[in-house]
Picture 1 (cartoon, one colour):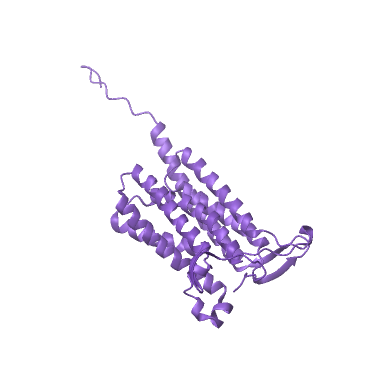
Picture 2 (spheres, rainbow, N blue to C red):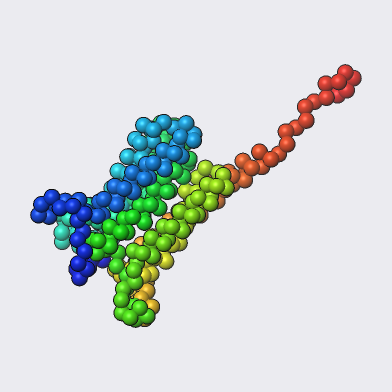
Length: 277
């Protein structure tokens, strides 16, 4: 599989139930991420009167759409491996999910459910951001156990690989901080979500510089620094960034109009004194 290493002697299984069967670290951290994500989404939903069952149903549908989208994009971007090993396509528990596909698939599923139930969509999308940040942070630990998401070898690091998984964990923390700053500002609904999309588009492009992934269009690697261009994710990251900027500008205009309406004093009532007009 693309990006896999075989010389790291880490057991990918948390618990063994038999030969080749058990609970993997990757799956464990994925499950923890989902549970925490549903918790934070439920807290956000409760503030606008969305009951727990509705939040849970929306979250599960978004998770399903996200996993399908994430796996589909990952398979398409590493088709050379999966074309030769088609049986591995459904082996999600072994790793191999694209966050770009997860965002698109999860958002599409959530949007469909919110429209069907007439839910406050952007409030709930804001509530999904903490779970995504947690997921990026924890699942990268699973990637380490699976020997995935490898960095380029770099002369400046003594020939060692860049710890690409750790870099993305740092980026997840940055995105978490940006999210909570937006929430504390009481920004318009949707601003925290689109701020996350903008931040993720930028940071993911940067993180891909260090990933030892197949390159397209422009094949360039600086072996001293251990950076390269262009991976398929880098090609698509500007699309995510552009979508995020457009969405953020739209929701900020809503925020500006909301603040203006709130701060504009109400018109004085008409003078009802007799003899006046």
